[in-house]
Length: 175
Ligand code: S3P
Image (cartoon, rainbow, N blue to C red; front, side, top):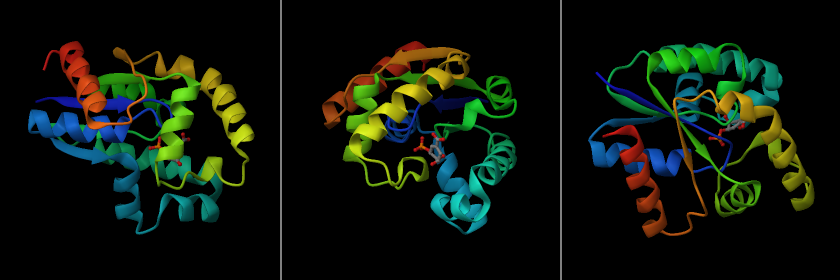
């Protein structure tokens, strides 16, 4: 039985890399945000606006405990998941955690390329978003650093670059 768990900041490529890695390994892929949306029948944005961030974190914590009991799966967590409650310790217990580490400029570029609505970044100017990323990354880094494995990721703006990251992840994880 094997579980692989990807963590890292918003825009680090957890979902993109996770999907491709799971496909190569023939493992089932789950994105925690999507799992939450399915179970709650609400979008992440709706949960944030109804319950606030604190309410969202409780839901996230509870449903993480549900999802991370499934066997032989690859999970991509939300950017904040490892940074609340004892989630990172639980994740380390449940599987092989891999931190996708990216520089703030890379995160910003990935986030600009994506279509996902991130409640924490709404109503911010590009400058404010960049500032927010740098500040929050410093706070979150100690939690991310607790992952069993770490991979430096650079800009992934085409399939070839995604494949290179996936190959590096496989080497690191020994799969
Ligand atoms: C969050 C990241 C999001 C989502 C929510 C909060 C965060 O997931 O869980 O918007 O606190 O970093 P992604 O990292 O998949 O965007």
